[in-house]
Length: 191
Image (cartoon, rainbow, N blue to C red; front, side, top):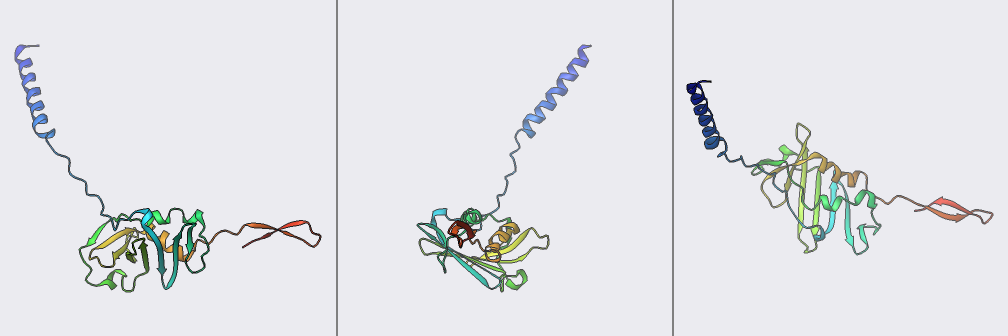
């Protein structure tokens, strides 16, 4: 290989290396925009959860023994309930759809499909309105009372919460022993 060809190759490698060093490695990564929190509270702060969906309401209260239906004091089914308080500590929105809502009816917020009230141990209440599902079916339009922005909340979150009314988390009946006519124990469904 001649000296001239070697020199040209070295110059080309230096130019390409200089370009990469100056321009490509100096580029800063574009910041990623995290979806905003709809609201954010601690799990141990939640004292009461009320969900009203299409006119039917269920209210659940935290007691020292666990979560119960507020009106009957009946415990909730822990299999169905276990993740609900965590879901209500603060859903992450998909994005802010609008800085404010001009006409709530356009988004199904007047009247809302679902109203979720989270009462904290400090007696403060966070009231969330869930409206219509977006045209793509991926999100609900949502707004917190007292806050201007219109958020998009994942439809799966809204479906889980509204299911507390559509299919309340009543405890599963268990079999309890009872005696038949001969006095031998028999099993009958209990309450």
